[in-house]
Image (cartoon, rainbow, N blue to C red; front, top):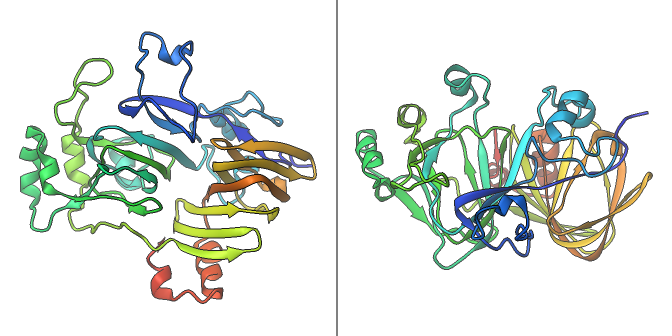
Length: 357
């Protein structure tokens, strides 16, 4: 008998940031005034809500009270599935809320991280925008004609934004950020970010700001300049292929060997078969209802995160209100993305825009 036979709920972890927002509605509730997170700072800004953090805690099932890191270490493939043999959860996912610019930054690949930051993985990631205000902006890649030699003086002077391409993202837009892509998020955004389970970031330009501790935040110029790939084009405004299902809509957003992301709109009872080879994660961004399987049912609502372990088998979502959720997992690129889209007649040239080997 498998240890995990039903959905498992994870707690959220809120991260204060100097560029965050005071209001996380309608996705999440901000910490109440008496919350220890607000101690000594009634004007606390929350910049990130991590939903698969190592310290996220399980709220039900045989691992109730354990952190995600503890359960992953103890159960490994029984929790993650046989397709992932590591003892750490394979994917880090978070929501980001911005009221100001984040630093200009870049991430290394696995090979560079193993050599220069042993014990860390590299960081391949993506953004999926849920809200984009009128003043919203992102920086993505170098402007045409900018030479590598121009970067260090600009980083030192806090003027690197002038050398980077600037865009205004739209709601529902997906951006792929392979290692080596220099980037920054601007104000007025709410987005979902999913990536390798790594927080390894090389900060290049923080515009002379002070951190929450009142001190300048460190830069990582030598390593950052090592890994920047100036030739990378901005991989944004991807097609996000939408198909109709009996329960509503299924949106194939993006896939690579580290993670895949779909958006599901559930308008009536929807039956699913959990993968026998991997864990899947459901993040509810709108709506409420029940999640059911042979072991019973549990209520879900906006802002919750549910793991579907390999032993779950069949399960159903029964919406009380129309439900939108993000589903992410480590994919088999052929079986999970290319083949389903080919069967629906999507041209190979279009599929290549959202499936990255």
